[in-house]
Length: 459
Image 1 (cartoon, one colour):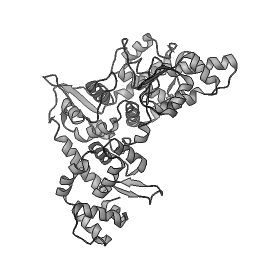
Image 2 (cartoon, helix red, strand yellow):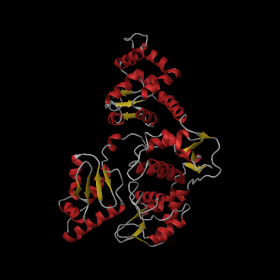
Image 3 (cartoon, rainbow, N blue to C red):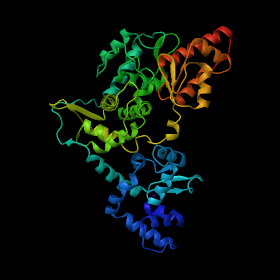
């Protein structure tokens, strides 16, 4: 809806609040005069220039996210979630309505929904991007040498599936590939990586702690799309779905892979979708990496063992480069620069990117499942911890509690009627990280042991 439509749809009390805030000199009892005066005021570029900083006061991230949100309508629950991170919560929603850039309605579904008028949103987005760009150091010409991968990841996915099709890929007890097969696959890929040395890794996928970054994303995507499966016979194999993979264009497959990346990495990097949207809007020129990170300081935070700089350069810029969205290079002073690619401009459209809201769901994510079978609880939610206790034992009490999965506790929980599939679904709903593949596989093996031993029916 455009601003004129939103004003016409609004009740006279809302229009009167807007008029009082801006001291409009018109009759407060004539809806037509209120609409005309408000429209005249909001069409002034200098007015928006002056008011935008005031609208952002104490709620800058919330305003930024709403203006970049591609959907026209946002539910009351989502909006409350967005503003809860800022001072005032629901009070800020009322203030935004009084300020005249946010409008409620029940006309669509009977439930209260909110929208920013599309024409006003476009003007505000342009001003926000211009405001954001002034904080960056940019250049028309980039480094002499740079790295760009284009659609290489999709081609490497095909190479990986072809390898599995023609080789016996034996899996270890925890479901990962043996180093020999992994080494052979990595050497065949267009963009090579080396197998991991022993290190402590978690948070960015179900096989992230076993495979290097790029291949871990590629492998998890293939598993999520059901192109591959890890059966109990100990050999990785293709599924029927893998036979149809090439029927979809490379561009659409790349877009699907980007959505998967944003969904997977969004758990440890909650503002990832917003960061990517901003990068898509402001990086037509080459941008000095550290100035962009400085501008994004309120959106990028450290995640346990990952410092802010590592998340920025490896988890965000590095993966976006692997996905063909940006090119990166270093100058003579070893400073990192990046620029969006033509492929990135084609893929990172407003319609292609996911919504940046879903705050109510993110607030539920209080669990961190680690590859060593420990589950860290970061907040107090009794209903979640009660369910968690069904298949675990408490290892550490206190402000941050740690639970541990063991064969004994899992078999105990299964015997009392809990199913592994339902429990994994519960964990996925409340976890900040994907369940590590070795943990998921072992849970199913323990379930199989109980079924074979006692004839207990499990799902």
